[in-house]
Image 1 (spheres, rainbow, N blue to C red):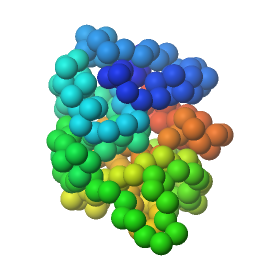
Image 2: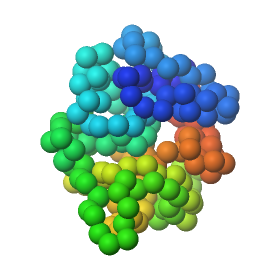
Image 3: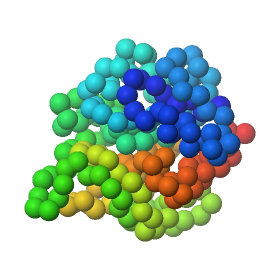
Length: 209
């Protein structure tokens, strides 16, 4: 069973629908006990970092996430759910979960660059993801859907698995241990996004048997 964490913000319905479409047993929950019993966790998100973290702490889900990742459970962060994994955000000068070293910074305004960044962008693979193989989730040049005004800047560039371009090159995806996280929304990225989630499920099922 996959627990989709409900902290009062985010596109929970579309993530649940996408996973259910792929035949996954998934539940939307704000109960740490339910999440602790799950084989894998998904942290989606839309909105502001500070409010999200206040809600996470109020529900005890911050500890749930840390414990799951420490135990090596498969974990997927989406959009704000990726940004919350880092230490701190320029958005309201808010603390994140501090699981991944690094900061979340505002996309700089520039001529011809619209903020927030909303739309389809191609990704460029980095590191081990670029080498492909059976565990790779992404494909070079895939177009995926983004909605964001901030971007994560990891201290360790080796965790980057994909970059994209919106005035600057920014982190589109990262991987560290059992954690995968996407700045884009696979559940809003059509057939390509569904296929990315299918690959994640296949890899998750292989590691939890």
